[in-house]
Structures are given as structure tokens and as C-alpha cells.
Amino acid sequence: MKEQVEKVLEQIRPALQADGGDVQLVAVTEDGVVQVRLKGACAGCPMATLTLKNGIERRLREEIPEVKRVEAV
Image (cartoon, rainbow, N blue to C red; front, side):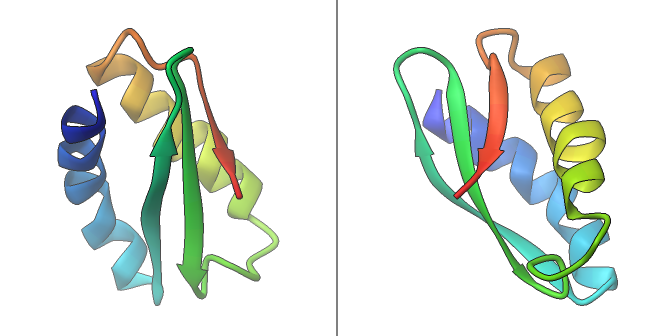
């Protein structure tokens, strides 16, 4: 599943980079939790939670049904 997650993040990454940010995959747990680290402008952005939940998590769950949630670490 980690490879699938990385592939979806590669599709999301250009939008984040356009705003000066990025996302790094940290881990995918056996129970379907994807742990990511927001970088650059995304790391300190007040909208980071919204980006994480409504952007990254929504897209990952659409593409990979086994993903239960996404959390920043």
C-alpha cells in the first residue's frame, strides 16, 4: 500500500509546491493510517489542517479504500 500512497502523493505534490509547500510520506501503518510531514509553506500554514483532511486525506481515500485516515507527524 505504501507504493500506492506514494503514487497518489506524487499527483497531489505539484499543487502544494505551487504554493511553496510539499508533503513527505513518513509511514503507512498496518491499520490504514497514513502519516505525512508537511514541509515548506505548508508546515506553518493556518490552512494546513484543511489541506491535510479535505485535500490529501480525501484524495487518498478515494484512490485507496484501505486508507482510514491521514495524520501529520
